[in-house]
Amino acid sequence: AQSVSQHNHHVILSEAASLELGCNYSYGGTVNLFWYVQYPGQHLQLLLKYFSGDPLVKGIKGFEAEFIKSKFSFNLRKPSVQWSDTAEYFCAAHGSSNTGKLIFGQGTTLQVKP
Amino acid sequence: EAGVTQFPSHSVIEKGQTVTLRCDPISGHDNLYWYRRVMGKEIKFLLHFVKESKQDESGMPNNRFLAERTGGTYSTLKVQPAELEDSGVYFCASSWWTGSTGELFFGEGSRLTVL
Image (cartoon, rainbow over all chains, first blue to last red; front, side, top):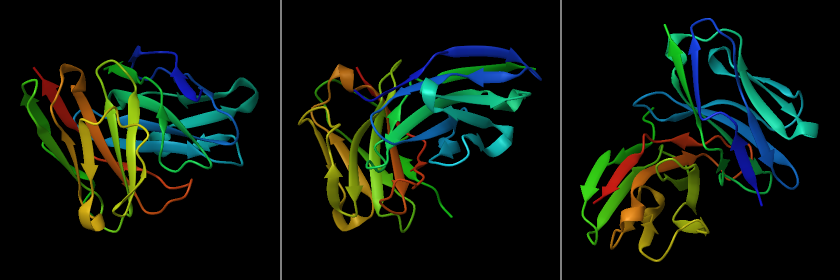
């Protein structure tokens, strides 16, 4: 069955610390991968996406993610977090034949302490 | 450009009552999706409209849920009668075209509490 798994449900960091949020997927065939973020009181918005090509994807606000096919992983990273990065982060996937039917991970709440 | 808007932002009803959630997609977006997040769980797909047609409704939990998109513009999701397990946040999203590279634009969600 298709699934997306996020390892950390709640992460607490101090400002300037480095961030890595884990995401693994189980998907037959070609997969497209996404990271969405939901800031408090706001809508879900796209951080970055991977469809093909360079497995290191850069997104908005200094975030990046690396697609490692052999590990079925798409971890999100940021070298130095800020208090404004406090939010919930969602990894998601869909197959190339599926349009818009995203499979989401459980979400990771990131709390950055000033 | 206005984003995806959802109404109401929060609804509290009693078990057995009816609730209708509304979603206005971004103008010109043919694709409209409903998702739901039950507390503590992952966001799950409910259904997908292309214009006014239901493309995929495989995620609809049961026949107490009815989604419509008359005229291919806004959409409504009606829950009748509501049960306790229907509580959660209902997200609407829209996108330009039916293609695997299409980014979904989400609304802020409608939080439903069934007492």
